[in-house]
Amino acid sequence: MTSLQTTAASNPGTAAAASGSEPRIRVKGLGKHYGSLEVFRNIDFNVGEREIVAIVGPSGCGKTTLLRCIDGLIPFDSGEVLVGNQRVTEPIAGVAMVFQHFGLFPWKTVSENVAYGLRMAGAPKAEIERRVPEFIKLVGLAGFEQAYPYQMSGGMQQRCGLARALAVGPNVLLMDEPFAAVDAQTREILQFELLRIWEERPTAMIFVTHSIEEAVLLGHRVIVLKGRPSGIHEIIDIDLPHPRTRDTLRKPRFAELRERVWSTLMREAREAEFVLER
Amino acid sequence: MSEQTVTVSSAPAQPAAKPAARETRAPGTFGPRLVTGVAILGAWEFVVRALAPAYVAKPSTVVMAFPHVITDPAFLKATGATLAAVAEGLGIALVFGTIIGLLLGRSVMFERAIRHYVNGFYALPMIVVLPLFSLWFGYSGATRLATIIFAAVFSIILNVSDGARSVPREYMEVARSFRSSRLSTLFGIVLPSSMPYLLAGIRLAAGRALIGAVVAEFFLSVGGVGYYILYNSRSYHHAEAFVGVLLLAAFGVGFEVLVGWTTQRFMPWYRRGDRG
Image 1 (cartoon, each protein chain N blue to C red):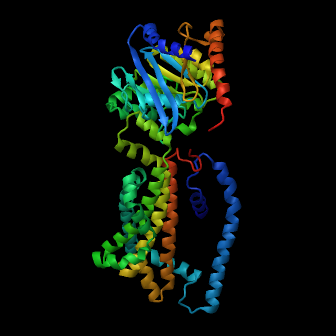
Image 2: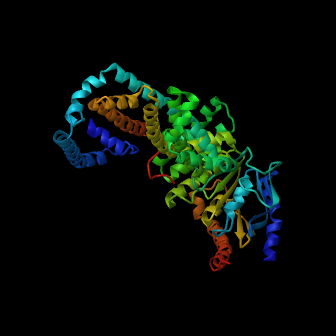
Image 3: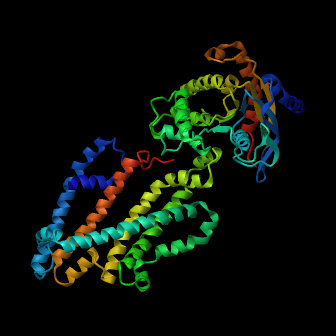
């Protein structure tokens, strides 16, 4: 365990090194309690300006809580989060989140939902009218501008959620298990859609998932969260070439890395599965 | 016409895209409904003819009275006065009820401060405040308006506050993540999310407003449908009074239809039993 923590501690620097610039997000010594329950402690990592960091962990390990802390949605107890040079204490401009529950407003059409972030940011009307169709097209929803969420499949709804986040022109995207609520085929399609969009408009991205495959496919690095309270167990560099496509899935290196993350995680998962509640 | 009305009012929030359900249901229910209606009217006619004096209203005399009552300028004026007062009172109750309800549902401070008063006033029979209102506002339309507002506003407040409290947490989270201001969250997210509750509140409020208007007219002798009914029944014009009663019932049905139509037309996203 100590040796693994050393890996973790020595790793944050490599993000900046890999992307060749200042990190966009710096998470330092982050800790969070819910009452007497400690969710995670001592979380340290950076995300480069054009880097996707995937976070995997067994269910209940606090990955979603961690992401909400980074977004400033919920307070944390120790450490700090810096986006650029700004300390996060509440949601800040330039950071956009995509939710597992989609979070679309049922009384708004696709257009209105996509415009929501821009409107809240106080964008002028002309800019909203220009950007909304652009991002609807980018996520492949052209022709569905006037549809309501209840009329759309889960995949379409999450495309809409993605367009809403992208429309505000964020330099940080926070993805909270965005494809966990859609079926397997749609999920695969959306993963490659996301990669295509990211190649077009690269940002810093934290992608929380419980799918190892997804983490390895999308991430430049994969962070494995461990235990109770959870901490960073290991940070694994994913040296698969970009752009990643369906071919990536067939590469031996992909399988190797997936096995590597799997074996790390499974030890944890087994421990987590057989823990009795206190 | 009557079949149409009945179907629409019993399912006001059905999406328009289900004509099949409507067609299969209507013929099955219409027959029994008609039989019941005819039986009630027949029994009424028979009992009144057999046992009561001639001036007591029975279906045949009500039907006879109908044409001359609804073309009577006095009746039309009375109807207009009552309807206008109800509409005005409902409008005022809607605006204030919605704002107070939203604050009540979302602000703990506000909730602690006024919850018990709202519950208390809601439970208060509106007729007991009439003597006070008549002292404050005089024997006039102003007292009727005040009674209508009093009758209507609390059911809107309570329903909207329930709606505001049950806004899904996801919506609030998204609003916060996109840096929505408090005011814009309240009116842009909490209010539309509470819309189904608000509609239920308006339905209740409309019924109570109508009762408030009629009771005020009875008590104050202010011109209106209520006073028209009272005056005619006291002067042995029972059939005429009954036309007024039927008109009040028609208000209720008409309002239901209006609310149902508005829901379908302007809130296509709202389907009953389909909310998360």
